[in-house]
Structures are given as structure tokens and as C-alpha cells.
Length: 176
Image 1 (cartoon, rainbow, N blue to C red):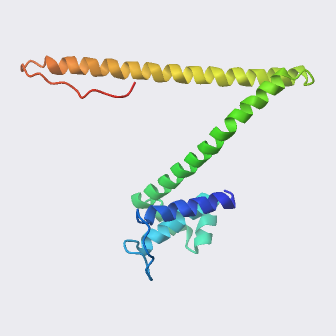
Image 2 (cartoon, helix red, strand yellow):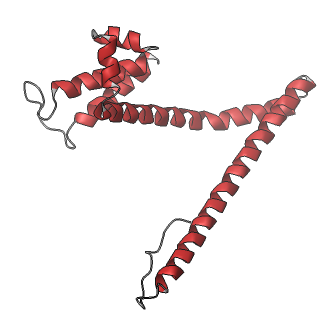
Image 3 (cartoon, one colour):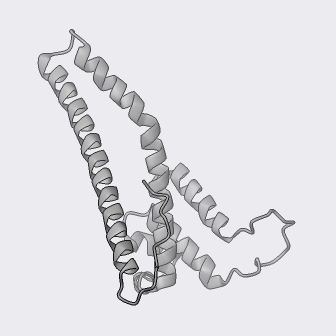
């Protein structure tokens, strides 16, 4: 993990413990933040920035066993999962921003007569693979949405004719 990623992660962990509205900072430990919570935050940052548990434990000046014990604690695992989700989200933003340029580069290579045929073919194949995956993903989402709507309709019909004469239905969905 790069230093800038580590800084972003530290800021994000601080944001988790910050109040919604900025207030004047008081002296001493912030209310509601325990030593355990601060140590867990440091543990999450260490695990996200170190290659091994041993390196993370060393960075924290704790034993490897202590860090493994933290990894069994649901509270710590929740913090670690949240940090991983945030890191993945940041990575997806960067990849999304770069995707257009990458596709444009593949198009330029595929059309560049000065490139060897194998290079142009590889670029064209990459473009076809990208398009094919996108089309398959879109089709899968449509099929899943159709299946969900079909199941909702069947369940709604079953609830209407449940034999007790009561008319019940499911709330309408806004997902399409």
C-alpha cells in the first residue's frame, strides 16, 4: 500500500470516529473513543499497510498472537471489513477513471498500421472481450431482475389466495 493510500485510510478511519458536524476540539481523549477502539483502528491501518501479520504486529509493538486474537473479535473484523470496502471503493474509482483511456489506447493500437499484426490482434481481442463481458453482465442483471419480478408476482398471487379470504400483497418495488 502506498503512503498516499495509507494517509487516505488513516483519514477515513478518523472520519469514522468524528462527529457529524465539526466542533471545537477539546483536550484529552475524545468522548466515546476508547483505548481499545484506537488500538483497533491502528491495527486495521497496520494490517492494510503491511504485507504480513507479523509486520503489522511489529509496527504496533504488540505480539503476533495479540493481533491474531483481534482478528477473532467481531468488532475488529467489522472495522477491518469496512476499511477493506473503503480501499476497494477507492480502487474502483481510480480504475473507472482510467478505463476510458485504456479502451481508447486499445482502439488506437488496433487501428495503428505501424503496429505488428499480433499486437493489433491482441488489442482487438481485448476490446471484444471487454464488450462481451459487459453484454453478459447486463444480460445476467436483466435475467435476475426478471426472475425477482416473477417471484414477487407469484408470491403476491399466493398471498392473495391463501385460503383465508384475506387480501394481502407485497409492497411495490422500485427496482427495475
